[in-house]
Every structure is written in structure tokens, then in C-alpha cells.
Amino acid sequence: MNGRERICAAMRRQTPDRVPVMCQLSLGHYFLQTGLPPADIWHDTPTYVEALVMLQRRYDFDGILVNLPGRDPRWREALKLCTKQDSATILHWKNGLTTTCPHDDNPHVAGPDGASLHPFFEELIPEDLYYVDPHDQYGVWPPLNNTNPETFFPAWHEDGIRLACEMTQGKVSIHGEIFSPFSQFMELLDYSNGLMALMEEPEKCHAIFEHLAEGAIALGRRKRAAGADAVLISSAFTGAGFISREHYAEFEQPYLSRIVQGIKKDDGAAIVYLHTCGAIGDRLDLMEQTGIDGLDTLDPPPLGTVELEAAIARLGNRIFIKGNLDPVHSLLNGTVTQVREACHERLSIASPGGAYILSTACSVAPHTSPENIAQLRAAVDEVSQH
Image (cartoon, rainbow, N blue to C red; front, side, top):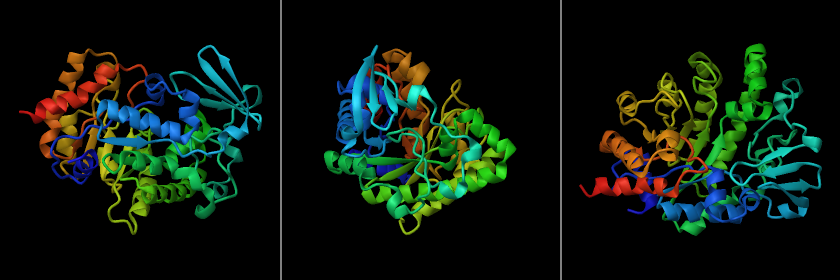
């Protein structure tokens, strides 16, 4: 089997020739480990995909998550000038915005004199919203008054997926990412304002989520059409550290269900899975009920509340699972031996069912040692030889 076939088998709850390996690397890790300019990785689609494929090959991963939208090929024409500040590159745009690109973390966009670009909740009109991309070239502010799926997303929006498929020649599983309505909402308003809005004006929040769900469906279908083998719904802010189980059932679950159904409509081969960080042990059943094919992260204690053995007992073989390897205490701060042992522990628990992808729970931290990351594939090889 090649990587694409291997991950496909695991996602369909079949038994591959070995456990697949696929981690989501932080953008900071790409910045530090590829030698490519961080500002170019973030803004230039060919450079970004070059970084993705370079590290996929270095770590021998079976899949790649394309988690940035394709960029306008003419993005450099919008630049006024570039400056340096310590180890960061500052991009000054002709529209008055600035983007600060650290050497080891995600860039961030600010208005004139560093002003925030987050709107006030009172400014939002649900009917004017369609989709909010937190990784847009100019930050999270969404295009307004355009809810037409034929014109909202530009033609180059899925260029990253198309190019990744081309560069890997069908041998590596390519996944696209969309954001849940709740995540879009929190990124748009900034988290504290978003949480307050849930309590103070829940009806308006529901109206907003309904519109954002439609945009997520359209984008998920576009990513499938561009060649993505699976669509990951990123829903990072819905663990117990942010909202209760009751609020999850009210503000997140219904919209996830609608998105999953919408992407799968007329596309029986579509695989849709969910990424949620942190404490999710009390809501695994609610997540499964959305109709997803798999769950990503499954943070173990102390980062989260998911014990892998208990999760498998609870979920059975009804969905595939990906993750549970502690990205901080094991991969970032652990020794090679400790990482290998942690991998073997997960493999001994999860590999017998077949529907498991070995991965860190959340993203690999920027400064994680490449040698530690390499232990994932080494551990799988050791298990396969016995």
C-alpha cells in the first residue's frame, strides 16, 4: 500500500498493511525546518505546498493536511514594502494593513497603528455572513454582502490542494480543512466577546451559525472537487475548557451535523472528520452523533481528558481515530526513548482495530525536534516487524 491507500483504509475502518502516520505540523515548524521564508510559506501557495511536501517526505508521513487557503497569485502586487523587526518580517500592504511574520509562529494582521480588525458583535448582520477564514491573507474580516457560493470563494482558493495532489502523484493522502461555524465565530469576534455573545444574544448567534454553516458546506465540497481525500472540520474551541456539554449540544452539534450531511450529499465517498482540542472526554458521544467518519486529536491528560483505551471502548469501530500522542510532554519535551515508548503504548492499544492513525493529539509544536518526530514512523516499523 502507498500512503494514500493506507490512510484511506484506516479512515474506512478497514485494516491497512501497517498503521498510518500523519501529524499536523504547526506553521512555525515549517518556518523553522524548511529553510523557506516564513512570509512566503504563509502567502505564496507554491512555496507553502513545497514546505508541506518537503516535511512529509522527511518524516515519511502517509498524509498531508492542507490547512491554508490558496492565495492570490498576484499577492506581491498588493505589497507596499517589507521591513524587519528583530527576527520577524513586517509586510506593509497598500491597503494600510500590516502583517507581522515571526520566524516561528503564525503571522498576524493589524490595522493602521496596530488597530484590531475584530468587529463588534453588534455590527454583525447574520444575512451578510457566509464564511470566515481565520487564515485569510488580511486576517479574519470576512467579505460581506456576498453569500453566493459561485462567487464567494476565488478560483485560486483550492490551489494548495490541487498542487499537493500533483506533487505527490496520488501516493499521499491529501486532506483539506474547513472551520466549524463556532470556530469561525470565535475567530471573528475574538474569544471573550464571542463567549459573551452566546450568553447575551443566543438567538442571533444561532442565526449567524446557520449562515456560516452554509459557507462551510460549500467550501468542503469545493475541497473535495479539488482532489481532497478527506475534509477536516476544525472546531478547536468547543472542548470543556470553553463551553459546557450542554452548550456544545446547543451551539455546535446541530451545525456540525448539517455540514457533514451537506458535504456528503451526492458524494458517497466523502470522508469528513473532526478536530477538537483539549477536554472532550465528556462529549465524544455528541461528536459521533454528528455523522463524522473520524475524530482527531483526542488530547490525553494533562492536556485533555481522553484516555485512548476508554475512547476506543466507547466509540468501538464505528469511527476512525487519529491522535492521542501528547505533543508537548512527549514530543516537544520528551527524549527519543520516551517518544518511542509513548508511540508503542498507543499502537498497542489502538492498532488491533485497524481504524487508527498514529499522530500527535494537536499540532506538532514549532520547536519540536525532527528526531523526535521521526520516532512515530520508526515505532510503527518496529511494531510491523513483530
